[in-house]
Image (cartoon, rainbow, N blue to C red; front, top):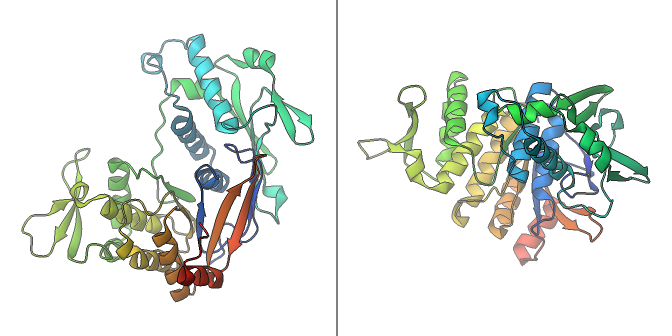
Length: 370
């Protein structure tokens, strides 16, 4: 390993239904498995939020999570300059509550808290201004205070990190249409289960090309497209396309026609290069990948993670993914860590850690540990 990992241990509570979750030891590459609603995606989002320290970027990430999980969209007035309506403010407030307490109820709500275990002073806390803590880790929503807060210039979210407090005005959420654009210096890039948007892929490939790292991405893609010669980005600004030049074909092939697996591996490889010295988070990493390429894909991930000093967090339900992860972990000097997340009835999530040796035994004997 070239440098220190972004996180060596991690705790989160109060985030999207995760009352309490602790990962006591993290590796270079971490695979999270577990049943639906076990908290895997929530954990990725919590790690992503924690690793951001730039206020503007953190706002964009928060908004993206609000949009994805609550269905909140800015009303049309945001582009016409008109004043927001009461129902628009209510919708934004509902979205903020969904961010914190989407699966909580009966007064068992509280602020989001994220921290690495040995360093509580770096804790990131995000709360609603109309949340009233009632002691013993519980809190309740104060509806009378909530009504008073529904004005455009008041705070809808409050954040505290390392003795620095920041407020996020309600006006910011309802008037603007921010778009998160992954950049070369992002501390935590995230690839959602649905994949990245084409404009994001094009912009990221531009950054890889400027850095002169195209060859590494192309090498990773050859794990599933062995006849790839080159990756091309052609066309005018705003109408460009990513094309694959394949051996034996006279004309390049648009990446969109290559299938979900190719798009997935390409996005992962590009993101690994841009996540240098940071973290890469991949939700449902196996989407679109055939079981026969899992070993090679994971080997590429481990290799790039070491080369670019990236800590990887990925989720999956696939047995083939687990086996491929185990194979690559045994071949790499980097540490691979497997966690199975299990949700208790009270909302707490247990993280059961498996060593590389235990994963190997489970894979060989086909012992179910997902």
